Length: 457
Image (cartoon, rainbow, N blue to C red; front, top):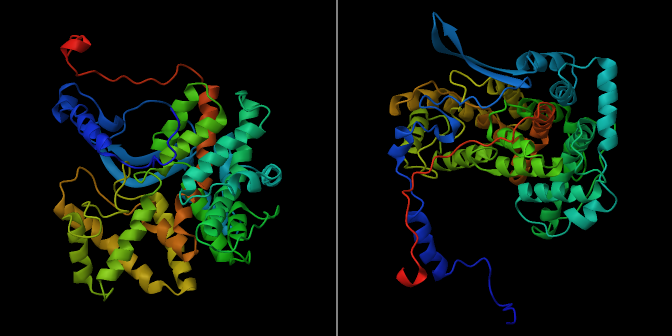
């Protein structure tokens, strides 16, 4: 039978619609069964706490403390290899250094580098910041699309073909692969966007090579902008964003994905692509885009950004599913783990105000500050919540990226540019402590059904 080349394979046909009804009706599970069988949906207990599924030395999220035998919420803390992230940031900011590279070193090797170690490690990353010959032309510039995360994942999987030791899971080889991916992610992300911008948006195509002596943040801005220029404050705030997003415990969705997929014995490129697929989800890496879209809607609906009553009314409308996407959420508020505060947001917000001043967007920053103040109070009034709620880092990061003139399509890939550091550390940790394949249990609640011959159905 000849192939019908007129078929639109993306069309949802009436047959598919009819079968979809069967899919939905035959896959619905009674929510009460989860309680009956004590199933922790989303690997979280009834109090919202994560179910313990592993051990790690890479990072710790602290959101509570025990007082007189009772668990009490506390100001959020984040530790990389036991070191308080807020202290790490204070250290490199005070010395006017870029911090992402030393953060990567800390996550991978367990301790902060001295000057010699940091210099040698930075040089190693610079050496690896070079794509295979013609990779940009033959891979990245081919079949560009608007989804940069898919483009990034495709590039990562294609690099497998350029690696003579792609399936070698020895620690030394995996470390080499991870360092190369950490070094290459800025180029893979930005070049992917530039291909899309040129071939789909009809913009000029300008490809800059990275400069060895520049930091990761500086290089990212350099290769993204047509003139390659940026201010020191811009680069330092982007560097800070990379540090704060580099790692966040083993339980976040993409990092847990890294552990699960690594435990199967697969190669580094496949494991990283799986984590990218997880991060792409709007409930994970795309949260700051939702914050930006929410604020754009808010600014459009509120002619006076100083009208406190109007701001509060809009926030209540969000919760009542009467505004923006009618999802009943104030995006950027709350976190699965933190309650009183997200330490990353606390660190970030002071620098956000500095950038807003430089960019002439202080009035917009004040709107963010008002929402950050009002939203937790309104949520507490409108919702029955088991813990406090506060702005998370996504609340500020989208605003920062917009002030840096980063295209919306790159927001999540830049998250990946940072988080590949944490993924790499967790992949190595899983391999060093290799045990059984991670295989949680699912209980079947479908009654046994006798088989019927075809003629009797």
